Structure formats: C-alpha cells, structure tokens
Image (cartoon, rainbow, N blue to C red):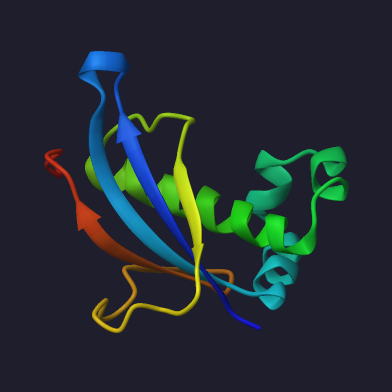
Length: 120
C-alpha cells in the first residue's frame, strides 16, 4: 500500500525563520525494505535500531520520506533545514504535481511549493 506525506521545511530561527519548501513523498513498506537493504541506508544512518524498533511500520515510512525530503530540500536550496518540520499524512497523491523531482530506494518525491528562498 502506498502512503503519501506532506513535509514543510523552514530555515532560520524565531523572527528570522523562513519557509523554504513543501515536498510530497510517496512511501510504501517495500521502500522501507529497499532502503534498509541498501548500502547507504537512510534509516540506518538516521535512526538507531532502538528508534526503529519502537516505531510502527507507518511511522518508519513517514521518517524515511522526511529524511529523503530533508536532504533533497537542503541540497536544492542550499539551506540549513530546521529540525521542526510540519508533516501530515495525505490521503492521495495530489493530481497536479507532475513528475517526481527525486526517486530513491522506492520513495518518490515531488516539490509542491517553494518559499522565498532561492536556489543557488
């Protein structure tokens, strides 16, 4: 089953905080397995085995989507991304997104909206 997530990323602190971008990720259980079996696993790099064991399968999918979206956002906009992310599970893939901007280990990622931060 495919699951869809929205992630909104910001940079800066307090009054200097700025919206960078919103990404939509498509995840599934097979993407988690593919990531965990890959040499450069995002989940193994960012979540300890204890963190992985304490989460539901759906929560691990959400984390995988966020990790990949955060990396792509940071690289695309050359911006430090805050730890606080606005995330939400969405019921279906919005129809107006076009082609994915990134695909990694079965996770597909779309750029949905950008803020005032410009790419370099």
